[in-house]
Amino acid sequence: MKRLLLAAVLSLFAASTAAAQTVIVVRHAEKADASADPLLSEAGQARAQALAAQLTDAHPSVILTSPLQRTILTAAPTAAYHSVTSEAVPLNTGIQAHLAAIVAKVEAAPDDATILIVGHSNTVPLIARALGYAEAADMPECEYDRLTTLHLLGEGRAHAIVSRYGEPTTC
Image 1 (cartoon, helix red, strand yellow):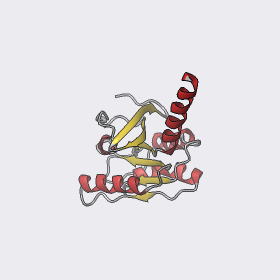
Image 2: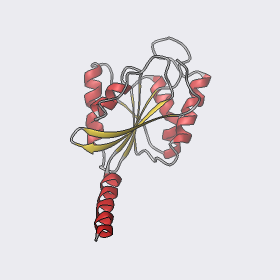
Image 3: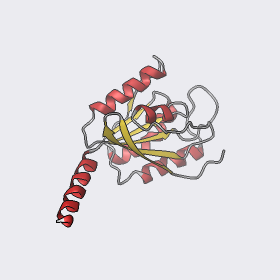
């Protein structure tokens, strides 16, 4: 009887986990310069390729970026590999509106979607928090290798796994 109960509980957990949205949040890769809308440096281009390699099995069906080149170019190899067109979410109405628009797009995606979001050092932690990962740490300007995977549980809650990808960054 205990085995049957345990099997039922595990199957319910597996079913609820499988149906949960997965959101992967990263910062754009390394910039070529300090201009307002720079391209990626060689290291940044390598990091964008590393992100695509890291996400080959993730199958993102939605890719959200800011309208700035560095986020679009970071997402580009992943988008090309999965034949997904990335969508730039406007920043010109302020960070709070940007966050609200991202959350709305995540909420509008199918329940079993995998979503890649490429943001900035000041938006990545805010996005993770807005999606239910209250403990998301602030991101220093020198950090490019953090990959936060959120499994959205509903009711503003998320289970998070923070990992690294590409060459380690040192701060």
